[in-house]
Length: 371
Image (cartoon, rainbow, N blue to C red; front, side, top):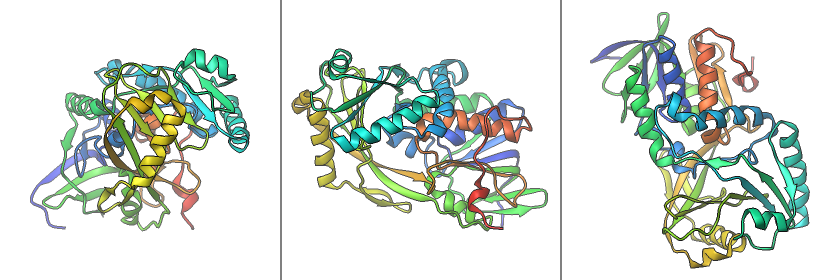
């Protein structure tokens, strides 16, 4: 690799989403010289394209303890991140519309409740006291009073200010072309320069599979293209965060009156081009299910829909920890519900890199690496 500029850091984080930025922030606060390299703008990919839901009801049971600790971090963002990020607790309802969904909801919410989430099953009358705008179609309803959301539009600004205040070098519009071993550290190629660093953290979201290939690993990162839409500002029509047991619906109304509608409906795209095209039938299906749940959405006009890339592993568990066979290299990503859990996972990984014992186990990627 040829270099026009040589920089020296204790750690370089490749990827400027919530997980990468949080890792970088805590490494800097631990005394390291840190840089963040982001191909676009901070927190503008998956960290921005989602609907901002912070729910205990959509996390796998094994991740509930992590989610609850991260919920506390979102709540206290003004203290550790330096800015209010619109953290709003509204409580959440998850609805099952037929017997099959009800059975699935009972099993899954029971597992999450056993893992520590304050989830209970309630009747329709109680649900409509909590959420007067709710239709009467649900067969079974789960309720979690701590379900919340935050404002994805301010996250990037908050992290940029916090990283700068702690001396982190921020390189936006800086895609990384490759990483090679360089003595006791690494040489990170960014197109026009090479940055030399003692440690590297791969936090590249859907691009983690390609990044790990730089270290000789073929890891089965799976990518989806998820759709979210938003309505015009409306009078208050709902109070809570609402989801469906099928995973095909999330709805919430923001303080400005707009309603965010999502739920895993897919669009067209890939990791090279990003989200390319909304599928009209999927958008219509998502909106119909939202209206079936909150009838007053019939009064709303959808003003925008967009697509975001989401990554996961086949076992739907994260990759957080050292990269096997590459001392000084670490990975963080493929966190289903990463918007919720990202701050806590980033802190845990930073603790590990700083030589401290994380208070909860990391998620070793060696489960996908053959000897």
